[in-house]
Image (cartoon, rainbow, N blue to C red; front, side, top):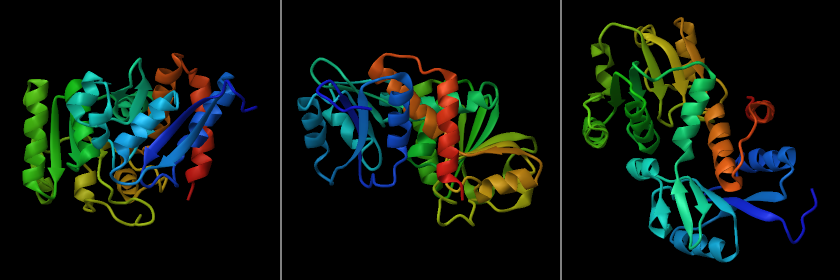
Length: 288
């Protein structure tokens, strides 16, 4: 594409950002949809988040994504926050408004769209959620909002799991999140579950580990979804498959969180055929 005086700019702020696949997604979307738009990463040092957001607005930047460690820090720099993002306490997408940016969380919307695309349902499900960090906390909200019957939240620290469960149950108005210490996984009722892996365990290059490695646990899992996308098949996924379940990685979540952000910025609907083309490109990028 030709960059000229009409080219709009979007980007990503975080630290680090050098590894990101987001430019590949957004710049391909712009090319396929014929938009005069360029997407670039911005490495923002600690303490400069507010400066970055205000500077972006002053420079007429159309929109921004936000990655770690600023998804919560950035909220104080926004003129408005979407209700879902406010509940989660994390923002990953900034949409330009009249006097600043409004914050959204397309991570969790992307996860839901990704799961739906694979035929995975949350409504009425019994779910095991591994982890109680920021990502798992957001997933707990999603499960509660989308009507999961029960979510067993397993974490090394029971105190942290209890804090997340209490917060989500309170905000959502029902007791659906049950905290457990990970070591007590054998106490899970004997049935089949959807399991969501929300920790960093198994992330490349430390890819030979899983939070739980006992085959007995995985025999209770009908479907496993790992938020990690590199490696393409995590140890968690391998164990799910070895014990008869279906398993998916987080690459489609990455794709769809970006697609939704792009739709917000440009007020468009990205055709599913375009999303599928970009997914094939992403798969080749993360293959190990």
